[in-house]
Image 1 (tube, rainbow, N blue to C red):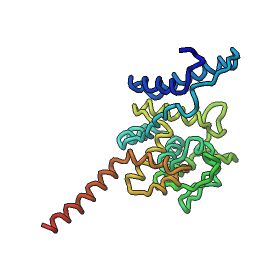
Image 2 (cartoon, rainbow, N blue to C red):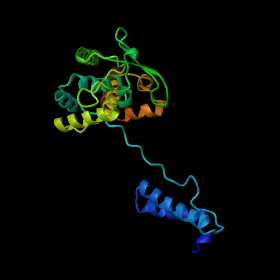
Image 3 (tube, rainbow, N blue to C red):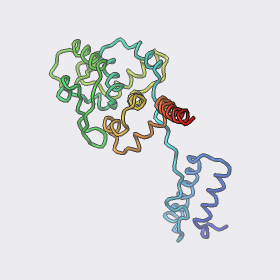
Image 4 (tube, rainbow, N blue to C red):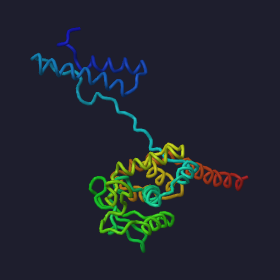
Length: 255
């Protein structure tokens, strides 16, 4: 077959062939990219008067991995090795408030309302403000840190405690390094974002409404939050047995 005569239908047949061979969507899309790039080269560099047969819309939709949350036993092991009050406060705000790592790094005193148990997240992802809340254990961890925090005029809450940058706001990478350190020390593979995922899953398992979780996490679309429902085995189990009790009760009443 000559290059000039190749049409979109031929590319689609090739895609079908790769699907039949059970190649992954990622690999198939990579093949499609090569075809598209080759025809773009022929047109732009070789001056061939041809139409690119790898038209838009052919690429396969890649599956989105489900958010991973930490199990209770993993959380217990992870938190058990954290001795620094600053670090415990950092991670508790992620776990209980659903804060992203950059939101914790940029946290300032003026957005924390202890009386209402509330934190106003300014210019979060998508430049949106949102309100979230902190639990008693998160409030206690934060208070413990503030009691030992070095006096300074710095408005950001979390500071570097050692080295040349002592007294300056801790960076996102600095927080991630602390997470990596405790993860290795505890033997638990965990990330900062996993703590946020864990909060969402725990809230859902406890019966919180999906729309409420969406608002707390600052998701722009409800579909993003709905992904957690696929992980909420405890809630599914509870709803199943609750429904079955009603079904069986109705059956016994008829008998």
